[in-house]
Image 1 (cartoon, rainbow, N blue to C red):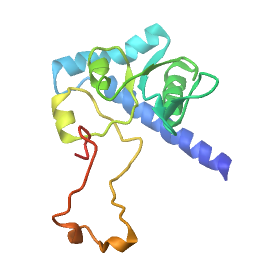
Image 2: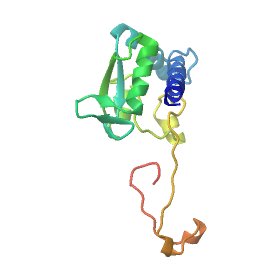
Image 3: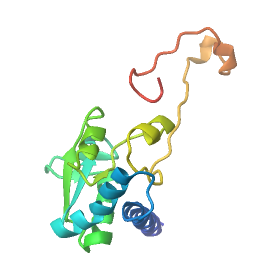
Length: 172
């Protein structure tokens, strides 16, 4: 069962890698600057012989540096799969740890080839950033948890209640 699941995950990652670089090499882009940048990404990676991935290095399960000093996690495996699909070698990856505030600037400045860090795809980011979002790699959602004794049994019953969220996130 575990082996089958790993094969399925590997297949999904490979398909996503194909979509990413198909988008990067597309001749029909919405703007000239996006077209120039996107069409050059694949060429740059091939010429350099290495994929530069912007990652989170402090998000357990997605991207962390382990006790041996190596990157690991879902996002790291995704970068390895893209490198294997393009370069034929999953070890041809440079990981660039990025903060949430630095991730889009690094991508826009071509400091990285691929951003695979927890990043929510929103309409405003799609419109304002000039980057090509691809298929989501992870779906999440928002939820509420309250004490059973609180009396709340639905979102509607919380009307007028103060709710806290992390400022600067897509949840806020």
